[in-house]
Length: 143
Image (cartoon, rainbow, N blue to C red; front, side):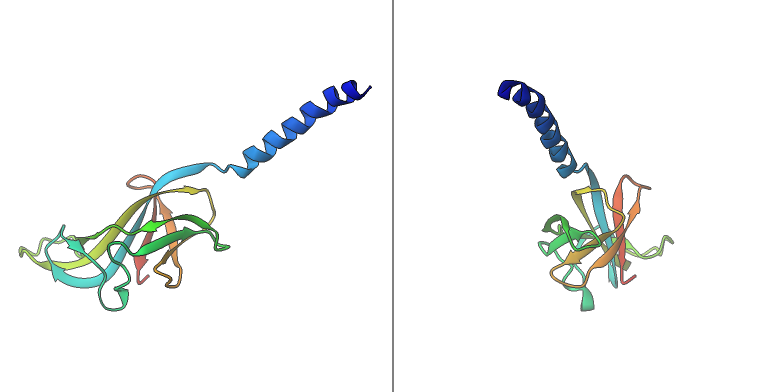
């Protein structure tokens, strides 16, 4: 009788355990976190940059976390160097133009309704999904 019960119960327990493992492993997707720091510096386009003034915490090697609405950490790492991008689409016909500093970092995160970026312990910044140039989470600072 004990063998019969074991033969009936064991597969059920094994199936339940495997289902629990599948629920615990969430699907994760690769995407890019893109942050545009509107510091309005005058510099050439495409050069390495960092945030200035109240945005000095945006810099190469600054620690970051991507979190969900509850504060759960979905990804973490260090920011790469920023790259200057033109503030205006208009060609100003000069070498140095007003720019913003853009940071782009690849991450792999679980699907959530809300994403936030925390840089070097500063208050969270809302990230907005944007698939115009591949899957990305985007923020403009200040918003």
